[in-house]
Length: 186
Image (tube, rainbow, N blue to C red; front, side, top):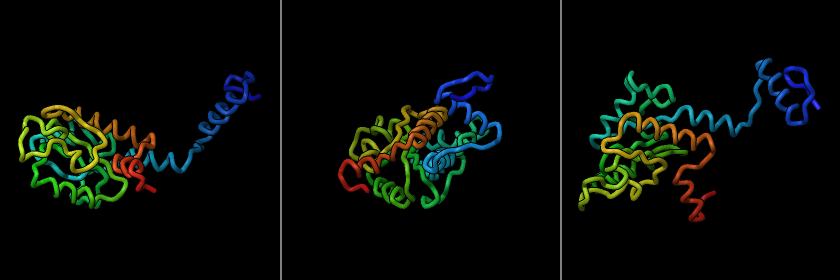
């Protein structure tokens, strides 16, 4: 039995809560290393500077003062894929561009995530022809899809927040999930 904040006795669960309350008052927090790593990854997702079509304009506008993507720790768009852990495929992917998209994705360090932004990146959009890949998921594994033509900056921010939730919950990136499913993963 323990005491709650008002001094009344409580059971074992209440005792843990009371201990936690005392620790917070003393300025001491306890957690696991895994939880801290997930929190750090979630809070510092750095996208690669990579835009293919009109959706890229909307992606760029998420960093301006009106939308302020910096509030969520993703304001640092990296010019090198080796410094980024998020690829936002913003716009249609042509057959000629698909190998380049794959190469850039392969150059990113692990763990890495992909957001498909817009109808063209997600499904080919209105470009139902031989020159456009009918969904970037044929080229790289996609973690989050952001719908729209073009999707709004708020839509992209919502997608980034969904990705951050997945990271915080410990859900592996899509490529890891596929490796595990195929039996190649560690």
